[in-house]
Image 1 (cartoon, one colour):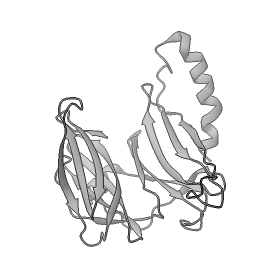
Image 2 (cartoon, rainbow, N blue to C red; image 1 turned 90 degrees about the vertical axis):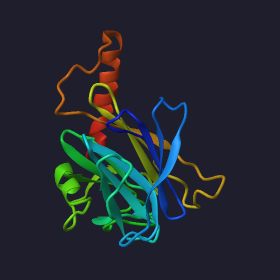
Image 3 (cartoon, rainbow, N blue to C red; image 1 turned 90 degrees about the horizontal axis):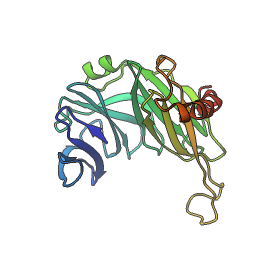
Length: 231
């Protein structure tokens, strides 16, 4: 979900080649659903959108094209009216992308699965570090390939579907489905495991917790776990 400049809560979904927005102005008591964008070149079939607020009056949508190829992007000044689709030059497989805005940068996470490798990577969570102002000014387009690095090595047959939340102290925690048996997720016997990932806000020197009784233990857990996620 994304909070807009008017305090509305916005949730984006897809269906039938369209992207829809559900918006609430009363903390989720009621919702209004509208169609906000559809398939048009270079986007063939938009699915699984990721939307972030870059700054006041600046929103970015990154979506997977179900026909394959690179992720496509568009921009908005209000979260409801969107520009034309642009090619991002970010290769995608069959997993949705995820966008995080932190420390003045835009982080695009891509899941490279065994069945759909990205740039030769398999079973890896990849990340591209981008300039949010430049991306917005270009309408979501990225000129030339972005440098992708490995954020995490997954288990064999990693699935992905990463989600990330920002904690009050500036750190981020993410969850993804780390793996399944090679027989596939359609097999009831397939075992899948969701694992937590933690990122330290290395540029945020604020105290880890406002609750002294809890801070020490939480800080210890995060400092023990996050370096393994940043390879």
